[in-house]
Image (cartoon, rainbow, N blue to C red; front, side, top):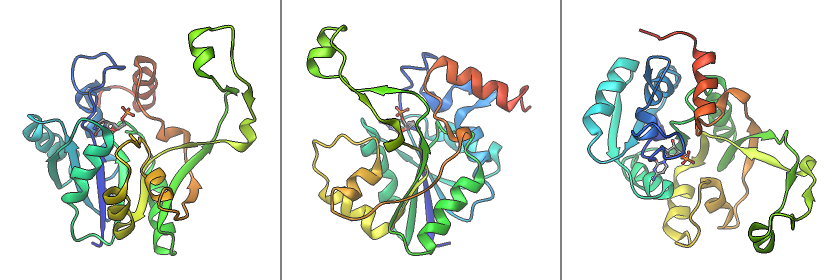
Length: 229
Ligand code: C5P
C-alpha cells in the first residue's frame, strides 16, 4: 500500500481522569485504542500507532486483539511531537493520514472520503462539521473578568475540524520540517496552510467525536453497547 495511517495515542488523558493514558483507558470493555483500531481494520493503509514510552508492548497486544498489524513508535510531549515520530516511521508512504486514537468511533467511510480526496488530487484534506453551539470570542480582559465577554462569532462561518486529516506525504513532511516551533498545533492541516498551500474539506461525522471528558466516555460506552468480550 502507498498509504500510511498514523494513529496518535500518546496523550496523557488528564481531562478524562482515569489515571492511565487516554487511549489505554477502557470503554465498553476494551481500551479506546482497541476500538479505534477495530474501526480501521478494513482500510488499505500501513498502520503506525504512536504511544507513550513504556506502553509499546501493551499497544502491540491491543493491536493483535483488534485484528490489525501495526508499527508501534513512541510519541512526544505534544501532539505535534507525536505526529512527527509517526511520520519518521512512515518513510515510504505517498499519502499519510493522521488520526486521533481518541476519535475511536470514526466510521470507516469518513477515512475513505479522505483517501478518495487525496487520490483525486488534493494535497491536504480535513473532515469538517458545522458548529452547532453559539460561539463567543474571549479576550485577555474577558478571561480575567468574566462579565467582559467578547463578541459572538457567526457560526455559519465556522467548521469544527476532525480527523483523519490526509496529506501528500511530501507536503506534510515539509510542513513539519518548516513549521514554526511556536505553532503548538493540534491541527496538522494548519501547518500545511502556514506554507501557503490549500486545504480541502470533506464531510465529517458526529460519530468521529473525540473522547476527551468523562461525559464523552459515557457517550462512547452507550454507542458501543455492552462489553465486546
Ligand atoms: O489531547 P487531545 O485529546 O487533543 O489529543 C488528541 C490525540 O492526540 C489523542 O489521540 C492523543 O492520544 C494524541 N496525543 C499524542 N501525543 C501527545 C498529545 C496527544 O499522541 N503528546
